[in-house]
Image 1: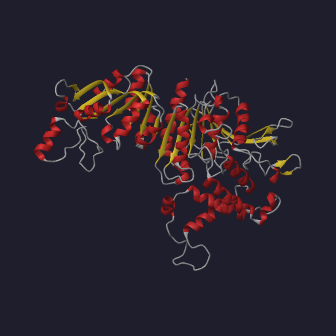
Image 2 (image 1 turned 120 degrees about the vertical axis):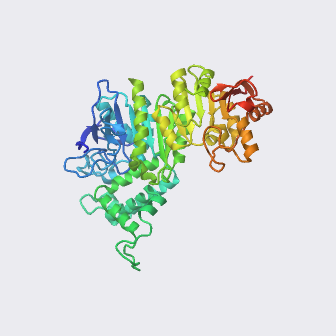
Image 3 (image 1 turned 90 degrees about the horizontal axis):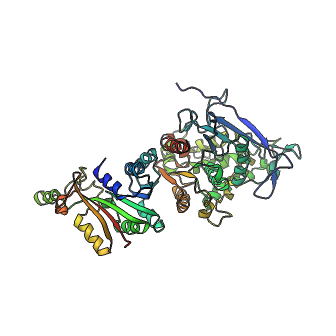
Length: 377
Length: 195
């Protein structure tokens, strides 16, 4: 039996006034706390550190178990002893993003200026701001150069931002199921989610922390989001037209189909672990993401990243961040003469495949990391 | 090592940049990396083989060479290798044209369908012979959509003004000296557009 791997979340606070973090919007934020977890041992020359970046609803708890929990971290099938990100070899760090609600400073944190939760007083943050904050954590951990930055979806956006904002701090990068910019359809789905939250009377312009939160709105936002993480094929396989605990149609508006019940459950359970305001801020950060912004083109954005080795991974049935958008990244990297491997994994799981297709990802990521690590030794 | 790989190795200069079209499991690029310290890259459409290449430490792009090759800049590579893949390509003309543009030299190898056994197979049996690469494909399974002979290829080069720098003819790993279009199973060429 596999040994149970216990881990604890740690916290790092920085950017105390007057040294607040300057945000892309021009506003300032501080002090900032980042929740993070680490796995494995940092080696003597600090050359084996891998930073893993999470997606929209993720957190710092990427793998292992918290004491008393029945479920492991969100990428436990990929991170741990002997796994793709082998914690026997590498020192793995995963940090929660700013704007989140999993221990890092976000809209539900106490605003030191008022003594009350920030709510909408929290400044709008971007992917670049998230990465700037993480850079402080990496400084604090004493790591000059990361062996690898890796992550899927919004995590992949942070990976790309790391290679452009701090290329000198990165040896290799694994952006998975992601894009260099959010396109119209992706923004559109996020906006539906935000409107669902903001139309919930309980939202109260973000001021609900001592009242009932806008759970209905957040649940609907999650339902929409969840559909985009699946695929037509995977939904058909999982649910088809099967009815939920009934033989015949109800001829009313109660739950008829399995798929409806599933979405309701996903929506409801999400409200128990996520903050509605965080959902607004983080989806906005995703929508603002355009790596080429300020550089003229994606090609020019990568012009200082030529020493970084890339492994770009996409999934055939991912229609939220389709392979075509990964290929755009690969083209811009190739045009810079950057060493980039591209793998499009055949899968029916849609966007969620990056969390589920562990076997094939393990095969290629463990090989890729092994060669990157050997090169520096 | 396979004789055709050894020939390709000898054609390639140390420390050069090499692109292998249809690199399969990356065996040839890994061999050239080890023997000639090349900076190699492969293009391969089959996902399983792409993963095998990655496991060998090869940089590889999973995709269709006909889609990506036209986007590569001129003279981006010293060599492009098309190893026993030409006959499987949907549009070999496009691939050859762009290869000659993207690389200084193109190394092409292909099974020779002018081989005498192929001729006699058709003549005597009146049926399409199984692929001569050693695979027993039927006509409806074979990936060889553009079978060609040594004569066909050399004539093509002549028409298109492509210079053949070197040519090798093999039959079961042995070099063929006379009537290669009749006796050889494999042709290996280094071609270029430059004078």
